[in-house]
Length: 379
Image (cartoon, rainbow, N blue to C red; front, side, top):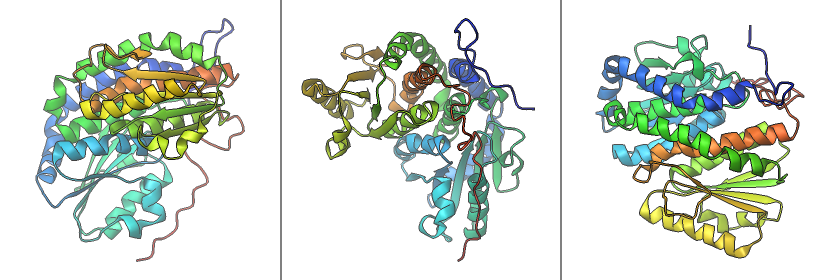
Protein backbone atom coordinates (compact mmCIF):
# COMPACT_ATOMS: atom_id res chain seq x y z
CA UNK A 1 0.00 0.00 0.00
CA UNK A 2 1.38 3.45 -0.86
CA UNK A 3 1.97 5.79 2.06
CA UNK A 4 -0.79 8.39 2.58
CA UNK A 5 -0.10 11.84 1.19
CA UNK A 6 0.49 14.42 3.87
CA UNK A 7 -0.10 18.16 3.96
CA UNK A 8 0.18 20.88 6.61
CA UNK A 9 -1.66 19.91 9.78
CA UNK A 10 -4.35 22.02 11.44
CA UNK A 11 -1.68 24.11 13.12
CA UNK A 12 -0.05 24.99 9.81
CA UNK A 13 2.97 22.72 10.32
CA UNK A 14 4.15 21.09 7.10
CA UNK A 15 4.20 17.34 7.69
CA UNK A 16 4.42 16.35 4.03
CA UNK A 17 6.68 13.60 2.78
CA UNK A 18 8.30 16.24 0.57
CA UNK A 19 9.33 18.24 3.62
CA UNK A 20 10.62 15.17 5.41
CA UNK A 21 12.56 14.00 2.38
CA UNK A 22 14.26 17.36 1.91
CA UNK A 23 15.16 17.51 5.60
CA UNK A 24 16.48 13.93 5.76
CA UNK A 25 19.20 14.44 3.16
CA UNK A 26 22.15 14.73 5.58
CA UNK A 27 21.14 11.34 6.99
CA UNK A 28 20.42 9.70 3.64
CA UNK A 29 23.73 10.92 2.24
CA UNK A 30 25.56 9.40 5.20
CA UNK A 31 23.58 6.18 4.85
CA UNK A 32 24.36 6.03 1.13
CA UNK A 33 28.06 6.47 1.77
CA UNK A 34 27.97 3.75 4.44
CA UNK A 35 26.23 1.38 2.02
CA UNK A 36 28.87 2.01 -0.65
CA UNK A 37 31.61 1.45 1.90
CA UNK A 38 30.10 -1.89 2.90
CA UNK A 39 29.67 -3.00 -0.72
CA UNK A 40 32.91 -1.53 -1.97
CA UNK A 41 34.58 -4.85 -2.89
CA UNK A 42 31.76 -6.09 -5.14
CA UNK A 43 31.20 -2.66 -6.71
CA UNK A 44 34.86 -2.20 -7.53
CA UNK A 45 35.14 -5.76 -8.85
CA UNK A 46 32.54 -4.79 -11.44
CA UNK A 47 33.53 -1.21 -12.24
CA UNK A 48 37.35 -1.19 -12.03
CA UNK A 49 37.99 -3.46 -15.05
CA UNK A 50 35.55 -1.40 -17.12
CA UNK A 51 37.11 1.94 -16.20
CA UNK A 52 40.52 0.50 -17.07
CA UNK A 53 39.42 0.17 -20.70
CA UNK A 54 40.26 3.24 -22.78
CA UNK A 55 37.71 2.24 -25.44
CA UNK A 56 34.78 2.16 -23.04
CA UNK A 57 31.96 4.62 -23.70
CA UNK A 58 30.17 5.85 -20.55
CA UNK A 59 26.59 7.12 -20.72
CA UNK A 60 24.69 8.51 -17.72
CA UNK A 61 20.95 8.15 -18.23
CA UNK A 62 17.55 8.63 -16.66
CA UNK A 63 14.40 10.65 -17.24
CA UNK A 64 13.51 14.03 -15.73
CA UNK A 65 15.38 14.59 -12.48
CA UNK A 66 17.23 11.29 -12.95
CA UNK A 67 18.53 12.57 -16.29
CA UNK A 68 19.67 15.81 -14.66
CA UNK A 69 21.89 13.84 -12.28
CA UNK A 70 23.86 12.89 -15.37
CA UNK A 71 23.90 16.48 -16.64
CA UNK A 72 25.35 17.61 -13.30
CA UNK A 73 28.03 14.92 -13.10
CA UNK A 74 29.10 14.35 -16.71
CA UNK A 75 31.37 17.44 -17.04
CA UNK A 76 33.11 16.76 -13.73
CA UNK A 77 33.52 13.02 -14.31
CA UNK A 78 34.88 13.64 -17.81
CA UNK A 79 37.61 15.82 -16.34
CA UNK A 80 38.28 13.53 -13.38
CA UNK A 81 38.50 10.37 -15.49
CA UNK A 82 40.26 11.99 -18.45
CA UNK A 83 37.70 10.56 -20.88
CA UNK A 84 34.33 11.57 -22.28
CA UNK A 85 31.36 10.87 -20.03
CA UNK A 86 28.03 11.60 -21.72
CA UNK A 87 24.66 12.48 -20.23
CA UNK A 88 21.90 11.21 -22.54
CA UNK A 89 18.32 10.98 -21.27
CA UNK A 90 16.45 7.70 -21.61
CA UNK A 91 13.75 9.67 -23.41
CA UNK A 92 16.29 10.53 -26.12
CA UNK A 93 17.77 7.04 -26.34
CA UNK A 94 14.34 5.43 -26.68
CA UNK A 95 12.88 7.89 -29.19
CA UNK A 96 15.95 8.16 -31.46
CA UNK A 97 18.39 5.32 -30.68
CA UNK A 98 20.10 5.61 -34.06
CA UNK A 99 21.49 9.01 -33.04
CA UNK A 100 22.85 7.94 -29.68
CA UNK A 101 23.85 4.27 -29.71
CA UNK A 102 26.93 2.92 -31.51
CA UNK A 103 26.89 -0.81 -32.01
CA UNK A 104 30.66 -1.25 -32.17
CA UNK A 105 31.51 0.87 -29.11
CA UNK A 106 31.75 -1.03 -25.80
CA UNK A 107 29.35 0.89 -23.58
CA UNK A 108 28.63 1.26 -19.87
CA UNK A 109 25.09 2.56 -19.34
CA UNK A 110 24.67 4.08 -15.88
CA UNK A 111 20.93 4.15 -15.18
CA UNK A 112 19.39 6.31 -12.45
CA UNK A 113 15.87 5.47 -11.28
CA UNK A 114 13.94 6.41 -8.16
CA UNK A 115 11.17 3.91 -8.84
CA UNK A 116 13.15 1.86 -11.32
CA UNK A 117 9.93 1.19 -13.20
CA UNK A 118 9.68 4.04 -15.74
CA UNK A 119 8.96 2.59 -19.20
CA UNK A 120 11.78 4.56 -20.82
CA UNK A 121 14.33 3.36 -18.25
CA UNK A 122 13.51 -0.27 -18.97
CA UNK A 123 13.37 0.29 -22.72
CA UNK A 124 16.75 2.06 -22.74
CA UNK A 125 18.41 -0.90 -21.03
CA UNK A 126 16.80 -3.30 -23.50
CA UNK A 127 17.81 -1.15 -26.49
CA UNK A 128 21.42 -0.96 -25.38
CA UNK A 129 21.55 -4.74 -24.95
CA UNK A 130 19.92 -5.31 -28.33
CA UNK A 131 21.99 -2.74 -30.22
CA UNK A 132 25.48 -2.78 -28.72
CA UNK A 133 27.70 -5.80 -29.12
CA UNK A 134 29.42 -5.30 -25.76
CA UNK A 135 27.11 -3.62 -23.26
CA UNK A 136 27.39 -3.21 -19.49
CA UNK A 137 24.97 -1.72 -16.99
CA UNK A 138 25.42 0.01 -13.64
CA UNK A 139 21.96 0.53 -12.15
CA UNK A 140 21.48 2.95 -9.25
CA UNK A 141 17.95 2.80 -7.88
CA UNK A 142 16.07 3.65 -4.71
CA UNK A 143 13.41 0.95 -5.02
CA UNK A 144 14.22 -2.66 -4.22
CA UNK A 145 10.86 -3.68 -5.74
CA UNK A 146 11.32 -1.83 -9.04
CA UNK A 147 11.91 -3.47 -12.39
CA UNK A 148 15.47 -2.13 -12.71
CA UNK A 149 16.39 -3.68 -9.36
CA UNK A 150 15.66 -7.10 -10.89
CA UNK A 151 17.93 -6.63 -13.88
CA UNK A 152 21.09 -8.04 -12.29
CA UNK A 153 23.03 -10.40 -14.58
CA UNK A 154 26.57 -11.05 -15.79
CA UNK A 155 26.84 -7.68 -17.54
CA UNK A 156 24.85 -5.72 -14.94
CA UNK A 157 25.54 -4.53 -11.40
CA UNK A 158 22.64 -3.16 -9.35
CA UNK A 159 23.08 -0.88 -6.35
CA UNK A 160 19.89 -0.41 -4.34
CA UNK A 161 20.16 2.67 -2.15
CA UNK A 162 18.72 2.95 1.38
CA UNK A 163 14.94 2.58 1.53
CA UNK A 164 14.50 6.12 2.89
CA UNK A 165 15.75 7.51 -0.43
CA UNK A 166 12.72 6.06 -2.24
CA UNK A 167 10.87 9.39 -2.00
CA UNK A 168 7.12 9.15 -1.41
CA UNK A 169 6.54 12.74 -2.53
CA UNK A 170 5.95 13.60 -6.17
CA UNK A 171 9.13 15.67 -6.58
CA UNK A 172 12.44 13.85 -6.29
CA UNK A 173 14.63 15.30 -3.53
CA UNK A 174 16.58 12.86 -1.36
CA UNK A 175 16.54 10.32 -4.21
CA UNK A 176 18.26 12.92 -6.42
CA UNK A 177 21.07 13.65 -3.96
CA UNK A 178 21.59 10.02 -2.95
CA UNK A 179 21.84 8.67 -6.51
CA UNK A 180 24.14 11.56 -7.41
CA UNK A 181 26.43 10.81 -4.46
CA UNK A 182 26.49 7.12 -5.36
CA UNK A 183 27.53 7.83 -8.96
CA UNK A 184 30.12 10.38 -7.86
CA UNK A 185 31.64 7.81 -5.53
CA UNK A 186 31.49 4.75 -7.78
CA UNK A 187 32.81 6.46 -10.92
CA UNK A 188 35.03 9.02 -9.21
CA UNK A 189 36.41 6.70 -6.53
CA UNK A 190 34.80 5.45 -3.31
CA UNK A 191 38.07 6.11 -1.46
CA UNK A 192 38.30 9.62 -2.89
CA UNK A 193 34.84 10.46 -1.54
CA UNK A 194 35.42 8.86 1.85
CA UNK A 195 36.94 11.97 3.43
CA UNK A 196 34.65 14.40 1.61
CA UNK A 197 31.35 12.68 2.36
CA UNK A 198 30.97 13.91 5.96
CA UNK A 199 31.78 17.47 4.83
CA UNK A 200 29.13 17.27 2.11
CA UNK A 201 26.50 15.99 4.56
CA UNK A 202 27.39 18.71 7.08
CA UNK A 203 27.11 21.38 4.37
CA UNK A 204 23.67 20.10 3.40
CA UNK A 205 22.62 20.29 7.06
CA UNK A 206 23.96 23.84 7.27
CA UNK A 207 22.11 24.83 4.09
CA UNK A 208 18.83 23.47 5.43
CA UNK A 209 19.08 25.80 8.43
CA UNK A 210 20.74 28.77 6.78
CA UNK A 211 18.47 29.22 3.76
CA UNK A 212 15.04 28.62 5.32
CA UNK A 213 14.30 32.26 6.29
CA UNK A 214 15.26 33.59 2.85
CA UNK A 215 13.34 31.06 0.78
CA UNK A 216 10.23 31.24 2.94
CA UNK A 217 10.21 35.02 2.52
CA UNK A 218 10.78 34.84 -1.23
CA UNK A 219 7.95 32.33 -1.59
CA UNK A 220 5.44 34.88 -0.26
CA UNK A 221 6.31 37.46 -2.92
CA UNK A 222 4.38 35.82 -5.74
CA UNK A 223 7.02 35.80 -8.47
CA UNK A 224 5.53 34.78 -11.80
CA UNK A 225 8.89 33.80 -13.29
CA UNK A 226 11.99 32.26 -11.73
CA UNK A 227 15.33 31.76 -13.49
CA UNK A 228 18.21 29.59 -12.22
CA UNK A 229 21.71 30.27 -13.56
CA UNK A 230 24.74 28.03 -13.17
CA UNK A 231 27.96 27.29 -15.04
CA UNK A 232 29.81 24.01 -15.48
CA UNK A 233 28.22 21.33 -13.28
CA UNK A 234 25.71 23.91 -12.08
CA UNK A 235 24.04 24.14 -15.49
CA UNK A 236 22.54 20.71 -14.82
CA UNK A 237 21.70 21.78 -11.28
CA UNK A 238 19.97 24.91 -12.58
CA UNK A 239 17.84 22.70 -14.80
CA UNK A 240 16.93 20.47 -11.86
CA UNK A 241 16.12 23.52 -9.70
CA UNK A 242 13.84 24.90 -12.41
CA UNK A 243 12.04 21.56 -12.67
CA UNK A 244 11.53 21.34 -8.88
CA UNK A 245 9.72 24.67 -8.83
CA UNK A 246 7.68 23.85 -11.92
CA UNK A 247 6.60 20.53 -10.40
CA UNK A 248 5.82 21.82 -6.92
CA UNK A 249 3.95 24.89 -8.20
CA UNK A 250 1.98 22.70 -10.64
CA UNK A 251 3.21 24.92 -13.47
CA UNK A 252 1.87 28.12 -11.90
CA UNK A 253 5.36 29.63 -11.94
CA UNK A 254 7.22 29.89 -15.26
CA UNK A 255 10.76 28.62 -14.80
CA UNK A 256 13.93 28.74 -16.89
CA UNK A 257 17.61 27.86 -16.58
CA UNK A 258 20.83 28.85 -18.29
CA UNK A 259 24.52 29.50 -17.80
CA UNK A 260 25.98 32.83 -16.72
CA UNK A 261 27.40 33.53 -20.17
CA UNK A 262 24.55 31.98 -22.14
CA UNK A 263 21.88 34.04 -20.38
CA UNK A 264 22.79 37.24 -22.22
CA UNK A 265 22.20 35.64 -25.64
CA UNK A 266 18.45 36.11 -25.71
CA UNK A 267 17.15 34.27 -22.61
CA UNK A 268 17.71 37.38 -20.48
CA UNK A 269 14.57 38.85 -22.08
CA UNK A 270 12.55 36.79 -19.57
CA UNK A 271 13.55 39.21 -16.79
CA UNK A 272 10.78 41.49 -15.55
CA UNK A 273 9.87 43.00 -12.20
CA UNK A 274 7.95 39.76 -11.54
CA UNK A 275 11.11 37.64 -12.02
CA UNK A 276 13.36 36.10 -9.39
CA UNK A 277 16.86 35.19 -10.61
CA UNK A 278 18.94 32.69 -8.62
CA UNK A 279 22.67 32.33 -9.36
CA UNK A 280 24.81 29.37 -8.27
CA UNK A 281 28.39 30.68 -7.96
CA UNK A 282 31.22 28.29 -8.85
CA UNK A 283 34.30 27.75 -6.71
CA UNK A 284 36.45 27.48 -9.85
CA UNK A 285 38.42 30.77 -10.01
CA UNK A 286 37.82 31.34 -13.73
CA UNK A 287 34.19 30.23 -13.79
CA UNK A 288 33.24 32.28 -10.75
CA UNK A 289 34.41 35.47 -12.46
CA UNK A 290 31.76 34.94 -15.14
CA UNK A 291 29.16 34.06 -12.49
CA UNK A 292 29.91 37.20 -10.51
CA UNK A 293 29.81 39.31 -13.67
CA UNK A 294 26.21 38.31 -14.37
CA UNK A 295 25.36 38.98 -10.72
CA UNK A 296 26.83 42.48 -11.00
CA UNK A 297 25.04 43.08 -14.29
CA UNK A 298 21.66 42.01 -12.92
CA UNK A 299 22.13 44.21 -9.88
CA UNK A 300 23.10 47.13 -12.09
CA UNK A 301 20.14 46.59 -14.44
CA UNK A 302 17.68 46.71 -11.58
CA UNK A 303 15.02 45.06 -13.76
CA UNK A 304 14.42 41.79 -11.91
CA UNK A 305 12.11 41.57 -8.94
CA UNK A 306 14.78 39.93 -6.80
CA UNK A 307 18.21 38.36 -7.12
CA UNK A 308 19.39 35.50 -4.88
CA UNK A 309 23.05 34.48 -4.96
CA UNK A 310 24.27 31.16 -3.54
CA UNK A 311 28.00 30.76 -2.92
CA UNK A 312 30.53 28.91 -0.77
CA UNK A 313 32.92 31.89 -0.57
CA UNK A 314 32.56 33.93 2.67
CA UNK A 315 33.83 37.04 0.88
CA UNK A 316 31.03 37.05 -1.67
CA UNK A 317 28.11 39.42 -1.26
CA UNK A 318 25.84 36.38 -1.47
CA UNK A 319 22.42 35.83 0.03
CA UNK A 320 23.28 32.27 1.08
CA UNK A 321 26.85 31.27 1.99
CA UNK A 322 27.42 27.54 2.40
CA UNK A 323 29.75 27.14 5.37
CA UNK A 324 32.92 25.05 5.29
CA UNK A 325 33.00 24.56 1.51
CA UNK A 326 35.21 27.42 0.28
CA UNK A 327 37.83 24.94 -0.92
CA UNK A 328 35.43 22.29 -2.21
CA UNK A 329 35.19 21.02 -5.76
CA UNK A 330 32.09 22.17 -7.58
CA UNK A 331 30.88 18.55 -7.75
CA UNK A 332 30.67 18.53 -3.94
CA UNK A 333 28.76 21.84 -3.93
CA UNK A 334 25.95 20.28 -5.98
CA UNK A 335 24.52 18.79 -2.79
CA UNK A 336 24.15 21.86 -0.55
CA UNK A 337 23.37 24.16 -3.49
CA UNK A 338 20.21 22.25 -4.46
CA UNK A 339 18.74 22.60 -0.97
CA UNK A 340 17.56 26.24 -1.33
CA UNK A 341 15.85 25.37 -4.62
CA UNK A 342 14.10 22.36 -3.09
CA UNK A 343 12.92 24.36 -0.08
CA UNK A 344 11.82 27.29 -2.24
CA UNK A 345 9.71 24.99 -4.39
CA UNK A 346 8.16 23.52 -1.25
CA UNK A 347 7.33 26.95 0.21
CA UNK A 348 5.86 28.16 -3.08
CA UNK A 349 3.71 25.04 -3.25
CA UNK A 350 2.34 25.75 0.22
CA UNK A 351 1.85 29.45 -0.55
CA UNK A 352 -0.26 28.47 -3.56
CA UNK A 353 -2.43 26.24 -1.38
CA UNK A 354 -1.22 23.05 -3.06
CA UNK A 355 -0.45 19.67 -1.51
CA UNK A 356 3.33 19.31 -1.98
CA UNK A 357 3.20 15.51 -2.16
CA UNK A 358 0.66 15.70 -4.97
CA UNK A 359 0.72 19.22 -6.43
CA UNK A 360 -0.87 18.14 -9.71
CA UNK A 361 -4.36 17.41 -8.36
CA UNK A 362 -5.74 16.77 -11.87
CA UNK A 363 -3.59 13.65 -12.16
CA UNK A 364 -2.27 14.54 -15.62
CA UNK A 365 1.30 14.16 -14.30
CA UNK A 366 2.23 11.28 -12.02
CA UNK A 367 5.00 10.24 -9.65
CA UNK A 368 5.83 7.31 -11.94
CA UNK A 369 5.21 8.34 -15.55
CA UNK A 370 2.14 6.86 -17.21
CA UNK A 371 0.77 6.74 -20.74
CA UNK A 372 4.09 5.94 -22.44
CA UNK A 373 3.94 3.47 -25.35
CA UNK A 374 7.23 1.86 -26.32
CA UNK A 375 7.64 1.05 -30.01
CA UNK A 376 10.01 -1.44 -31.56
CA UNK A 377 13.19 0.19 -32.81
CA UNK A 378 14.14 -0.58 -36.41
CA UNK A 379 17.80 -1.13 -37.31
